[in-house]
Structures are given as C-alpha cells and as structure tokens.
Image 1 (cartoon, rainbow, N blue to C red):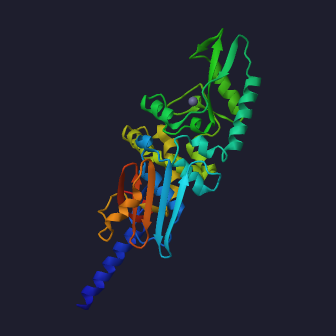
Image 2 (spheres, helix red, strand yellow; image 1 turned 90 degrees about the horizontal axis):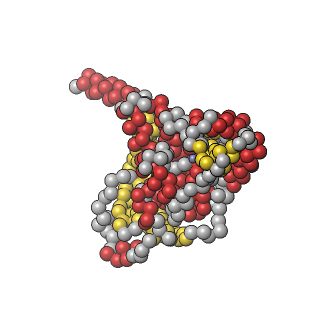
Image 3 (tube, rainbow, N blue to C red; image 1 turned 45 degrees about the vertical axis):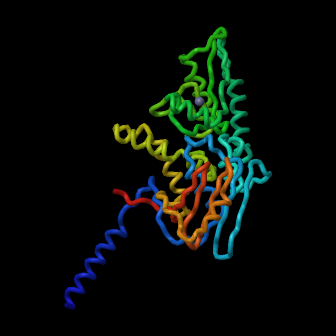
Amino acid sequence: MQVKIGIFFILSFCGFAVYGVQETDSLQLICQKQVIKSVNFEDLQWMFRERVQMENQFEIPIQLDFFIQGPSGLQSKNYSFGAASDDKESLFAYSNMTDDPLLVWGNTLAQEIENFKVLKDSLANVFKPRGFRLKFLASERGLAMQMDLLNRGRSKTALSLHNFNLAVDVGIYRRGRYLRRSNLYARVGGLAKNLGAFWGGDFVGFPDVGHLQAFSNGADLVRKFPELTFEYIRFKPIYEQNYLNALARGQGDLVEDTRQLIKELTKNRVQKVCACSEAITIPVDLPDQWFEQFKGMSTGYVYVDQQARWVYIKTGDSGYFYPLGIYSFAAKN
Ligand SMILES: [Zn+2]
C-alpha cells in the first residue's frame, strides 16, 4: 500500500513537471475563467470592443453606460463622444463610438502625422523629373472604406496606416496622364526611404509601388504606441485568418508582418481581464426589472458583477452574459 502511494506521487509529479515546461503560443490567447481581483472601467472598454465585430459597424453606439458591481458597491460611468479628455480610458471609449480612428488618435499621433507631412514636402522638393509630375493622392481614409478595399482585394490589411494619416499614395503623371507603371515609382520610393519613410514597393507578397508610409508595418506602430492595440484588436480575427490561410498555403514568409502584429497585440493583452468567449445563461438571482436599465437604442452597455464573476455586454439590441477571466497564452500544440 505504501509503495503504491509512493508511485502515484512520482507519476503525478512527473505529469506536473511536463505540463510546467509546455511551450506556449505567443500568437494565441485564451480567456481563462477565474476570480478577478480587480477590474476597472478600462477593462470594460476592452470587453466591449472585443465583442463588437467590424461587420457590426452600423451598430456603433452613441453612448456607453458601464457598471461595476464590486466589493465596495456599484459604480457607474457614462461616456459620450467628444468630451474633452485625453486619458486612455476616454480614448478607448471614443474609439468604441466612432469608425474613424483619426478622430480618436489624432492628438496621440500629432507629431508623427506632422513629421510625415514634412517628409512629403521634402519629397516633392527633391523629386522633380523633367516632363513628369508627382501628385499625392489619397492619404487619410476611414475604416468603412478600408473594409471595402479589403473585401474587393484592393488592400491586404484590415487596418492601414492610411487610417491614421500615416500613409500616402503617390501618382506619377506625364502630360496630365496618370501612369500606372513607371520606373519612376522606384525612384520616388528610394528618395522617400532616404528621407525615412517606408516604400510599398518593398512589401512582400503585395507590393504597392505607389504607396509610402511612416512606419514599416502595423506592429512597428503598435510598438511605439501600445494604446493603438485597442484600435487593431477588433481586426485580430481577420489578421489571424489571413495568417493561417497563408500558412496553409505554405506562404508563411509572405505574412511575416501579420505575424509580428498578432504577436504584439497578444503581448499587450496577456494577463488582462477578459470576457470568456462562450455566453452563459441568465444568472438566476437577477430580478426581471434588472434588464429595464438597459433599454435604449444605439447605446452600449457593459455590466460587471465582480463577485458573481460574470459580465453582461449589450451591443445594439442584444445582450449576453459571459464568465469573467484572464487572458493567458494558449499552449502550443
Ligand atoms: Zn496606399
């Protein structure tokens, strides 16, 4: 009997040790149900954002009503777009209430946008080939237009540096006629690179010779401005899908930028509070009139009950309950 118990312990210890060294996947997060020690309104902004898929953009709320039922009672906050505040929580709230990232992040990125403008001016000054003209075409664009380009295969990214006014398309013209192809695009690209920009002609997999941008890729932008993770996160499923599709085709090298971006996003979310993905049934102890407080249109609601360990998230007309959890890296399989 004694011997058996000894063996059992050794086995279970081995089992634990093996589990302990299991490699984790830095590209994949799972929301693990657990007791949440503290939760704040910024966490609620994230939970709301992660529930609202891009396809639902017509459901952008005009107001957010958030509640935290915690150990010290019920706290509530109400957000509406455009209140004069630049703290992260307010920026996240604004981001949840618009589809134009520039309206939210214009101040944060002001210096970068200005630097890029100066760079464009310098470029226009140094690139003056005889008989040709350089024109700056589209620079800023909203999310809806970006989605449209993506769906039509005209762009390869869900969120472009164009959305932050940190990219520009250039056109070369001869006698007023736009040239789709010309060696001059490579020259513009070379000059822009000398000035510190990044040229679309260098893009692996989807070269775009008429495109210039201020950062090498989205991952680079997020590395410098981690708060922009909030803007990118709603597209994470799209990036993940593109990445997996490319891997399945054996073209992993073409989506290195995407891999870097996903890695950056997961790194910034691990250990954070999350709403676990599978909805749960309505908690039994809730009185019928509890739902009365969430009646209204075009408004988003998040209600966390910290002790009961659930969160109610209502976007548009429908609301669901989810278990609260913490993000951790998934195990590599
Ligand atoms: Zn472009």
